[in-house]
Length: 129
Ligand code: HEM
Picture 1 (tube, protein in one colour):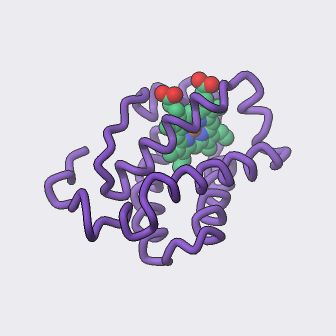
Picture 2 (tube, helix red, strand yellow):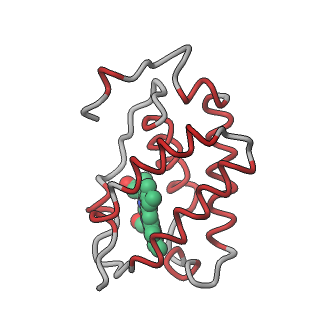
């Protein structure tokens, strides 16, 4: 992404601070457990290959945390096209992500940076009025 040049890839990146790929995978697993347990959200994922989705989400989050990982999934607008996702759904998904991060002991400043980046993707993901 465009801010790569300003993000360290090793050592002091948020990615390495929180424990690297292993930590991100654990957070993403927990994130989708929370989503699938949420009756307002689980229906969206009824036909989704979750292992495939998790793999892409781990790469995206790792990349956004400054890890040495490229995201090779679909862009977020394309991936969510036609799903009729409302703003409240988006906010619930972000809430579950924040819960998973915070349960894993990820520091608030890291959560805040990631949340800010993902908040900026809202317009690409929300399509219902
Ligand atoms: C912070 C917000 C979000 C992020 C970062 C995100 C990220 C992603 C990523 C990386 C993928 C995989 C794309 C690919 O496979 O190429 C994906 C797929 C998907 N997302 Fe999201 N997403 C977000 C919000 C949401 C919301 C709010 C919903 C619904 C309520 C949702 C439902 C889905 C579904 C159902 C798929 C799988 C589509 C399929 O089966 O092909 N996402 N998302």
